[in-house]
Amino acid sequence: MSSAEKYDAAFVETFMLEPKDLAALKYQEVESWDSVGHMALMAALEEAFGIELDIDDIIEFSSYEAGKAILAKYDVQVEPVG
Amino acid sequence: MNLLPDLPLTIRVGGPLDALERRPLRPYAEPVLSFLSALSKALLGRAEVRDHPDIAAFAFWCRPANLSRLSAELDRRHARIGRGLVLHVAPSNVPVNFAYSFAFGLLAGNANIVRIPDGFAQVEIICDAIAALFAMPDHARVAAMNRLVRYPRDDAITTALSAECQARMIWGGDATVAHLKQLPAHPRCVDVAFADRYSLCLLGAEAVLAASEEALADLARGFFNDSYLFDQNGCSSPHLVLWQGSAEASAAAQRRFWPALEPLVRDRYPLTDARAVDKFAHLCRTAGTVEAVRGAVRHDNLIYRIALDALPVDIERHRGQSGTFFEHVADGLEGLAHIVTERYQTVTCFGVDRQAVVDFVVERGLLGIDRVVPVGKALDMGVVWDGYMLVEELSRIVHSG
Image (cartoon, rainbow over all chains, first blue to last red; front, side):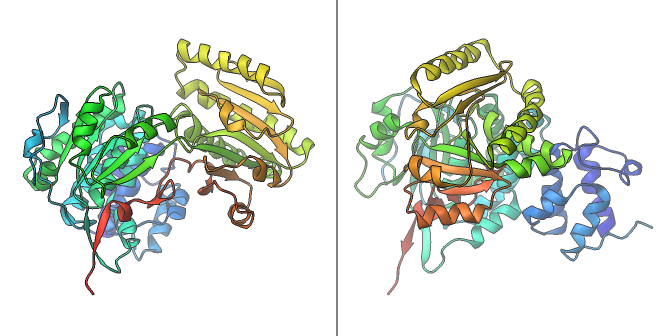
């Protein structure tokens, strides 16, 4: 799986969403991405990429788009699929 | 090694007591990390955990990335191994603490017998998840080393278990801790006690006034989690709110902060009739007995605010529950020097320089205050718990020289 596919899979599996709904996704805007869902997402991303997210980055991780820039700091490049 | 005696206790998770594997492992051993990681994942994936942020916080705490961060902080100057068997007498009023206590025993490399509390959905959810993992061959070693048990308060049972263990984790009020510590154990047995603690919150009035709507909502949510999640029973849950700033700014900040908290409490905090009665009775009693009480503001039954025009030295003895907060306005930290004793644990802060608070505690030689953290982080515990380095306490050094 590419990084982009792993990134999308973490959201899809954690929040039970369709891939088409991801691009505009923001924290607290769908029911499943609440504070508990956030913890599950962060754990899923850490596992998928073998990284340890800094607490400040966990707090700043406020949307699907913003997350890509945060992961770039951990040398994870999430390029658009296809 | 002796077999454990057959005791009249109920085993909630794990095999019979006499089959307990008591040979310790090294701290942060692979079977333990693999078990706790699996537990984290299992809990975060369960739908009912959405209703229990305290379980989610535990699951998030024992995820692999955090365990590896904790492991990196272990003192590795000498070889270390678990002490053997740890008996945990978990608190009866905070549902998830048994799980942290258990996890620290495991991380240090020990076998564990954990006395778990009754009457909490959270306890059952976590126990079910642990039992499911114990049934898997991958976790056979960890399963063999651990039992989660229930028994009524019974000195005979605690004494029989104490005789066999190398460390005890004792949670409870001062009286419980003192009582359990005097039950005989091996002279080498290490007791780690978590007694009553008292915590407070420092809010910067100007910062509350300047906060964006979003930041205010985060602050209210953080304060709610710190306070209401365990019904103000957590050692680190605030009972006293000290406003830092002028009287005018603080009054305006109070008018902004408390109404932001109110809807959260209304939506998320189930106030039973019995708790509501206790809460009101406490308010009446306090108004009659604490001289510095200037008045009280009630936000329905959700939030009780008791205004103090001075800080009584014994304020920690008047703590309430179920959302009862003493409030005092002061510019500067000087008031802390008059009230803080060894009982004081956590200071949660918003709009206040946390390092300045730490410096104040150290420079003034205060006997208490172990943690200074942002509002919302009261219940987040790292490798240092209540002033203890727990993995170090619960393991021993094998020294060559």
